[in-house]
Length: 166
Image 1 (tube, rainbow, N blue to C red):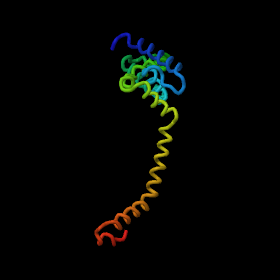
Image 2: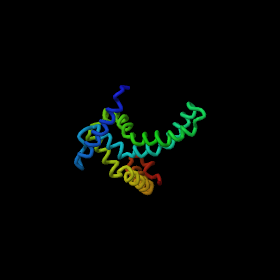
Image 3: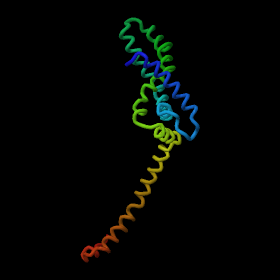
Image 4: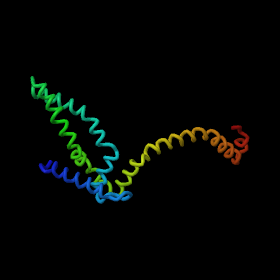
């Protein structure tokens, strides 16, 4: 890892945020990096990371207690007053570090389409619609299957099959 990576990540994050804000509604951001960042934010990744901070803080506290025996009060204060706030303030840097697979694998337009899919809650709406499709298929399949089977039997050249009852 290059020493300048956090600085580059912060600059890339700021540039991505600026590009995302400058992008006109209905159009993809100017770069895959900006659109990838917008996509992971729309997917709730930042919220998930914030939600994981208490577990991270506990793990950090345990680690520091092990490394600093007898200083549990200092460790607790350090985690609560210094480390967790610093991590929270710099989460966007971490997010930027994780964008490479999206940037490498998709164009800005493709990332925009995925982001819009999430923003419009199409995934949840599609899940509900597919449940209804499954319900309708279950409801209609018995009668449909009977009809197809009767027509298939009626149309067969074998007289023994034609007089089977379904």
